[in-house]
Each structure stands twice: as C-alpha cells, then as structure tokens.
Length: 295
Image 1 (tube, rainbow, N blue to C red):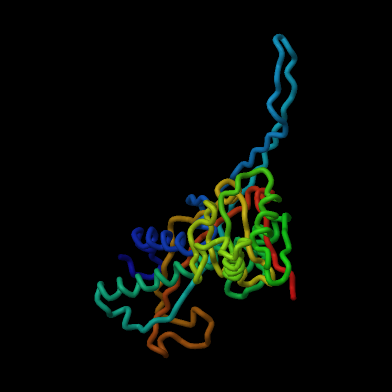
Image 2: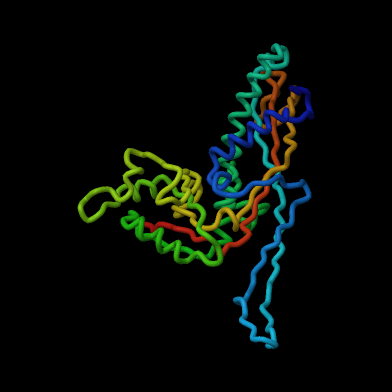
C-alpha cells in the first residue's frame, strides 16, 4: 500500500474501484468497457451501404459500398479530494489502509455518478453546467431520435415501444431509466387491472424487463430538465474505459481545495485522487431518448 505524495492507488484498490463503478453506473453496467490509453483510442465504425447481390453464372458483379467512420475516445481527467485529520500520517499501516478503503468506496460512487452525468448530459458533475471539455460527446447532444412523453408518463410502455422503433442500425441491448419512469411503468395495468410489470412492484428495480437489461438510476434525470430514458445498442454503439493508473496524493501543506483554510492550521491533510475516463457514442443512430413534456 503506497501512501506517499505523488504515488498511485494500489492495483488491488484500482480493481476494486472499477468493480464498484460498474455496479453503480448505468453506462458502465450496460456497455462494453476497455482500458483507454492516455493519448486516446481510435474506434472505427463500419457501415455497409447495400445488401448482398445475387450474381448469375458469368454475370457482372456490382459495387456494394462501405463507409468507415473513425472516432477517437479521449480520456478526460476528473478528480476528487477530501480533508482528513493529520492523524492519518501518524496512524498505523492498518489504520491508513482502512482510511484509504473508505476513500476508495466514496470515490467509486462519485466516479460512477460522474460517468453517467457526463455521458448522458455532457455536464461537469460538480457544477451541473455544460462542459466545454465534453462538448457534444454525450447522449443528449449526439442522439437526435427522441420521443417526448406527455407530462405524467401515463403510457410509459407505449413510449418505450415508440422509442425502440426509432433505433436504427443496431440491436437494442439495454435501457437506462429514471426512477420516475420506473414508477410509471410499475403503474401500467392490463385490461383486467393486474400489473403489466409485476416485477416493478414496491419500488423493485430488476436487472431486466421483458428480457431487456435495464438499469434504474437517478443519473438519467439528474441535471436534466426532461430526460427520462435512454434505449438502444449499448453493447455495440457505445464504449467507455479508463486509464489503469490512478494517481493519489497525500497533501500536507497549503490550501489545495481553495477553501481558504490552511491544512497545517487545522491539523489536516488532503487526499486527492485523479482518474482518466473516456467514452464515446459511436453510433448515435442506434439509440433513442425519452423525454417528458413540461406540465
């Protein structure tokens, strides 16, 4: 376990961190993940324009056509820091490990939430405003297939069917929905009054609905006025990853969080971790968004 300034997270903690992120982030759970180098990773999206051609004996072959669109996934640096008592410096190795494990747990939750907010809405999670660094590399900006549901989401099931009908060029492999959309689905009934989705009763959030992987998460609607669901080819049309090395600093002097409080003056040290996350909406046409109209 490395604890000195400028060191790196222990590899075991990095593995644990990523597993926790995958358990709490909708895009991480539904999409493919792979390590992303610091200088970015180029992905190629192939599109074959025509169907196969029947050729008669000694017949002439025709051109089918193919388009190749390169997309580069560039990792973005994100950070989180926290002040702790300077007793951390003088604690036993076991006590310091326990503190770092607790920090790791909290950092994982923040990374998971942040990844969703950045990938769904293109915002800086801390400020809640659009990030120029992220630009259009997010679902809200890239995906133009949108179904606007009436306020109240009365026919949530029909809305999803309409959204799926807009998905073009990919398989529907997953769906991320906001808690209020989950509630709307739970309220859908058959003609005899029985629930259409009994697995959603009492706030339950199953891993799949009608066989489709689903993740219920506040990040779908947080920091957005109208977003309620995203559905499409998360396995083939979206990719995310992280750089394996996660720097960890233990800062003993100054005011690293610009709070106006000197660390030494308050008997504190500052733990700061940085991660490099990258993602890309590789095939925007393979997704659809569901929004809710204002009252």
